[in-house]
Length: 112
Image (cartoon, rainbow, N blue to C red; front, side, top):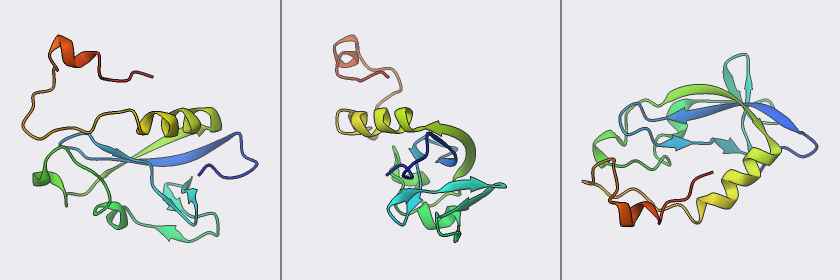
């Protein structure tokens, strides 16, 4: 959930350097904040990248325990809501497929 009463936040996106999967980390029922380069909960608890490795979905199991790259982003409430709406309609990656879907398959993908 987006922090109540905020129009935008500084967030720390986590991305796999191999398969490029992303995670929008959160805790305490809210997205974490980027405070001085540290992922911080609303209550001020510092969170660590390795805490999110096991819950980040990857394209291939080969990269499932690699360190994730921290990417600082400014995220608006509207952008967060759009991502939340698209999650259910976005197909999960299937292992072993190349990056370019066939023309018929492209129609199944959602673009924001």
